[in-house]
Length: 170
Image (cartoon, rainbow, N blue to C red):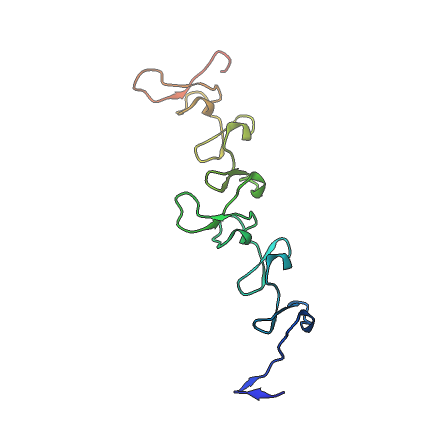
């Protein structure tokens, strides 16, 4: 093989048939090198074609990204209050975590619940979008749905609210 300026002279491709390696089957006519891809369609469905023309795995939710095609959810955007783009959910099927299976579309993040109906019996959806156990009579509360009795009241003006007994409970 001829050497030029201390470098081994390489054979350049001009068409895909010149690329016989299984990992780089496409000829980039501009550079003359065999590459993995020039578009996402040349990669597996869970991969995208990177800037360096390699098929790489799509990114999970809540990870920095540059474009939609880089995300498993196919949605890359700046979340509310954020400063850089991240992979965000657009529907609950994007959320595959065991404890965070609901997409809060207003933020693009997966949460455990948005409403009480998404929690089990004896639970409510708290301010952190997590299912919490309903509180027994006598404990402090803010809203009726936090209480086992579904009744959260102050016993007198100026007092803190607490879970109260009802005729149907306790």
